[in-house]
Length: 540
Ligand SMILES: [Ca+2]
View 1: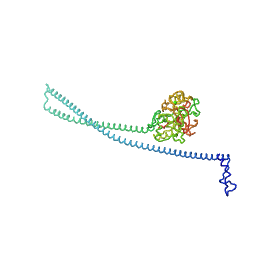
View 2: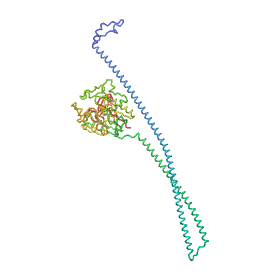
View 3: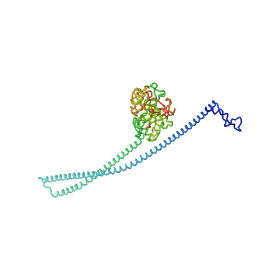
View 4: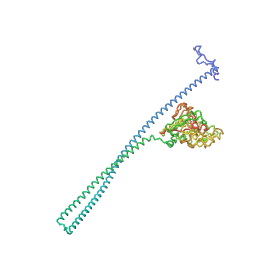
């Protein structure tokens, strides 16, 4: 050891003039035996470890400061977004008010136009009616004249009859002096009748005209009233639509997309279910109980598929985001199961892998791999900002509720793992042919590694790949059981929050883990080529 050389030189140490004899000289070489040196070395190591701890503590503290700052910024951002939302709502309200005012003016103008049109109609009607009345008056006058003529004719006939009767023997002819007053009287009567007939026609015409006016007024009033009522009904209906629109939630089962590059989402109904597995379930883990009732009060949306490579690429391209695997200073990249797999021989080493090149063949439609819990949350935050909707990871309870889709069986297709290959990409015969061991699914699903998202039959909620393909991150902190977990479907944010819950199993999952209740945990920064995610979204 080097300490031995140093102790050999002790005799050459010069004396220090003026120093007290009892004290060793300040610069004297000190004899140190091997034991003492080991002790000193241990002390030095302890000091250095203490320094390292201090440095780590400082780093940790700095990280905590950064986290706190990020949290403050997130809160501020949320406030700002809320303010922007409030401003947008106010602006919308102003726009609606302006539109209403414009509509009211347009309606008023319309009323004037309609009133003008009605007046014209009424005038036309009046003219028509006046003409009708005139014709009627003429007809009455003609009839009257005709009756008068008939009367005169009858009188003339009666007179003639009387004259003829007076000429008969015994009666003698009527004296001419008597005939003159009768003729004059008849002429006067004729004149009076002639004069009376137009007077009566005129009165009738006036009466008809007044009647026509009354009818026209009534029609105008009725039409105006009907128009006002229709307008009030239309305004009430428009107000009801504006009031109801923000509350109108899409129906369960509805598939929607907030943008062309956004994941497709399915509306999941509100409901209650039994979370966890019964003791009798084959392959059950101790962390899947105790079983408990969970109620989810509001519908929410869940990704129909796991987030794909293409969808994640859009995020990375728009933001320049680098995943934990890409940023890792120790260049660990993305850890993977396949590096020990005989079929994966010759693939890139973990240090070079990331979602861009996870060490196995993937198409853009396959679920993204090598993303940590942190990366998944960053994607959700970006999507929320991009769309103005609240995207997030699902809670563990939401995930299991959605995976079961109302069924109590171990898997959403039933209890039988042999049926898996219709519904999920799991460790099937193809995978284990190479290995020749393992508890595989005794069926063939057509994919050794990941499969295109949504390629297998969905569950009753219309969700694909809830089991198999890739493990999916959830929001919850890890707890080794459900005692004390929230019962309302919210995330359990107590417990071991350095580790987060993954659900659903992967392309490499054996029957024991390909179950709706099976759980798994990883640290928030962990990434591997078995794990991806899907997103949840609040349904507004
Ligand atoms: Ca498979």
